[in-house]
Image 1 (cartoon, rainbow, N blue to C red):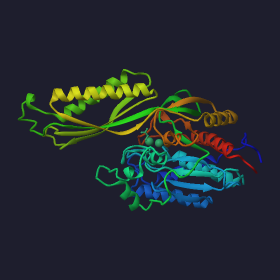
Image 2 (image 1 turned 45 degrees about the vertical axis):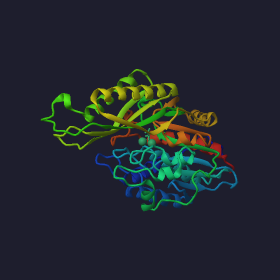
Image 3 (image 1 turned 45 degrees about the horizontal axis):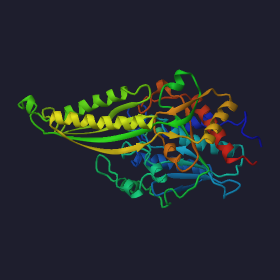
Image 4 (image 1 turned 135 degrees about the horizontal axis):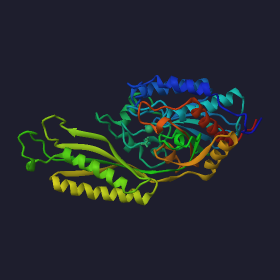
Length: 416
Ligand code: HGY
Ligand code: MN
Ligand code: MN
C-alpha cells in the first residue's frame, strides 16, 4: 500500500458535514456555539462523538477527568499508540471550529483509513480532552494538565464555577466520569489540528501553520474590596470605589502589554462588579487578567509590574486587593521530529506553509510534557475566534486535515 503520498487525502465533504452536525449541539445566539464544559450540551456532543466512533469501529475509553480516548487497533497492539485530537467544549460565545476541527479531524483520519482498508503498526487514538477552554472552570486545559501531571485530580474536582458547582460533581452529573486513571496512558506522539485563531495565515494567504512553539500564559484573578455607598450622596474624596480600581487595572494591563510589542498581549475578559446596582458604588470587583508572551522573562516581568501597579492603584483608592494565579504555563517548544513530520507532509501535499507560534493555549501545550507533540494550524476568516462569527472554509479544514493525516499515519507506520 502506498506510503503517505500524493494520493492520500481525507474526505473533505464528510469532515465538513460532521463539523456542521456537531455545531447543531449547544447552538449560540449568533450562529456559533455555547457548549461549555460539563453542561448537558457538552454531554450531548460527547454522545454524538461516541456514536460516530462506534460506527468507525473504535473502542472508547474514558478517564477520571472525562477525557475520551477512541482507539483504532494497530497490527502491533503493544506498540505505543499515536494520539490525535483536541476538545469539543466551547466558549459561551464560541465558534463552530475551535477544538472541534481537531477532534473530528482525528475521526476523519480513522474514517479514511477504514475506507482505504489501510492498517498501521501503531494503534491510533482519537482524543477529546475535557475542559480545554477554562471559561466555566479555570484553568484552561484542565484535563490535559491533570494528564500531564501539572494539576492534581482532586484539586481539579474541587474547582467551582460562578454558581458554585464543583467540577467533580458536574462531571458525575453528566455521566462522563470514567474510571481510567488519568495519565496512565503512554503515547508515541500526539498531534493536534486547530484553527489559528489569529490573522497571520490568512493575511499571508498560507494554507498551513507549522506550529513550532506555543506562547506562555498567566491568568491572575484579582478581587478588589472597597465600600458600597450611595453614588449620589457620597462625596468623591470619601469613596472607596472598587469599580474605579478595576478600570485603572484594565488600563495598566494594556499599557504594560504595549511596552513589550510586537509579541506580548494582555487584557481582562472576565469582569464582575458587586452589587452591580446603578446607584451603588461598586464595593467589590472580581476580574481575571490574561497576559501572554512567547518569552518567559517578559511574562514574568509583566506579572511583577502588574502586581506592583495594582498595589499602587489600591493604595491611592483606599481599597484592598487579593491576587490568585488561576492559570499558568511557560512558553512551549514542540517536538522537532513531530514538527518535521508536519512540515514534510505540507511540502509533499503541495500546501503552502510557514512556521508559526501559537497565540492561544492548547491541550498540546501540556501533552508536550509527556509525549513528542506538535500542532497543525489552518487559517480562520479575519483571524477571528472566541466569537460566534468564527469562520473557516472547507478547503482550509481539508488542507489542515490532510497534513494531520499524513503526519499521523507516517508516525503510526502504514503496514498494508
Ligand atoms: O485561552 C486559550 O488560549 C484557549 O483558547 N483556551
Ligand atoms: Mn481551542
Ligand atoms: Mn478556545
